[in-house]
Image 1 (tube, rainbow, N blue to C red):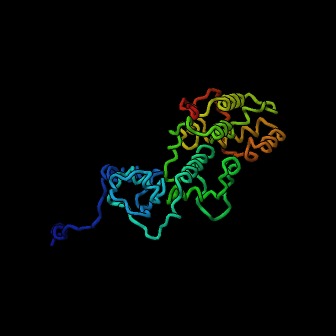
Image 2: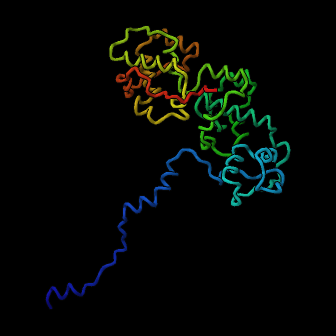
Image 3: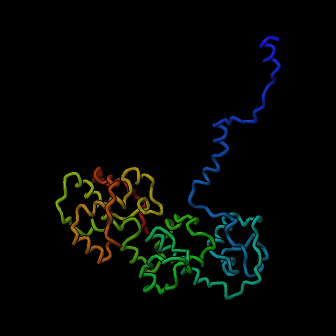
Length: 304
């Protein structure tokens, strides 16, 4: 028998291996990648729909009715925005009593507490009860009388991790109806501008080299301009990182370059700075900073 005849009788092997079509796989996975890449977004499975009393018509229930029945406000907002889904109906928790339901005034104060943190710290209060709690602004504790631990004010508004609840809602809040004490406090500074503060209040205590004069002029310009949502970390434009690099790390280095130790110590003692900046040798974008403000935009925080 010839070799060619032998080969002809070998048959066709089935390796059970599939070679994917990359373009088709990408199309199928795109929606999952879009969802999985986002840091925010609350799953209906993560909210609590248990309330203290029966709601006769769930399709017409209002936010106020949900709150009075014991549902947490962020949970309720997620459920309402989802269209009052029948897949996640309201259920009655017989163990819930009136004592478990906060008053609307308590809810309002908790919402403000969370809003204050977003505007001034760019994050929600700490939800965890373990470990040392981050510092709470004196304004909240002393002026507003909100002296409970931070997690208390988070637990009043939601049953899930608050960072999943997109912080950019704060951008659309109007200042017109806020208390005067609050508006005055916000005028002292918001998140994203703390490290610009020294450039508004101090002249350099050191001789500024030519290659840093552009950076200094830029920092002064932003420090003296009206704060915007493009710079605020909760809503910061991606172009800021592209154009200027990490603002905090570069500004920290610039502060150490142009101010004296005595000046920096005074900034810390007067709380212009939270702490003395630490040098980051990898943050060198500031050497190439031009003086023009190309990051602020016109979406002003204090526009009302």
